[in-house]
Picture 1 (spheres, rainbow, N blue to C red):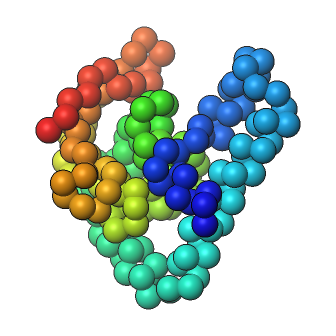
Picture 2 (picture 1 turned 120 degrees about the vertical axis):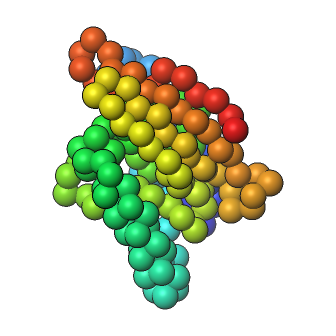
Picture 3 (picture 1 turned 180 degrees about the vertical axis):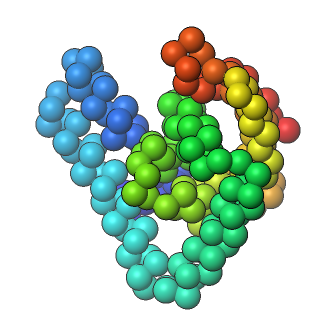
Length: 170
């Protein structure tokens, strides 16, 4: 249970970031494996919470599916996944711990939205054009006083991928 609390308060690096640090020689292989095991354990602990309370897990899933259905009504799934991947590269963005594999099409898109489980990650608005996008997100605590709202602007860089160009608190 301690691992999930650590993940909720201060997420450790994503598996992709850990591999990059290991390849760059910043951490040793054993350290990478230890941190990967912590990440895995935190996910398993969260799955165990839903196993202990299946009704809450089911309702969370329904809410997440509804949010994704609304997003996909006006945007392509590939574009939404591309923006989630751009968010996952941010070091100071806590939901990045859950978005790091948004480009895996075998994972349902609603798995990345967190409407009730902390840390919250909600997409309130999204506007996507060919070379830029704007997203209004809420993340953090369920308490409104501690929840962070951000307007995030994306720009397509020279490689053709979206990246975060501007973030502002609302």
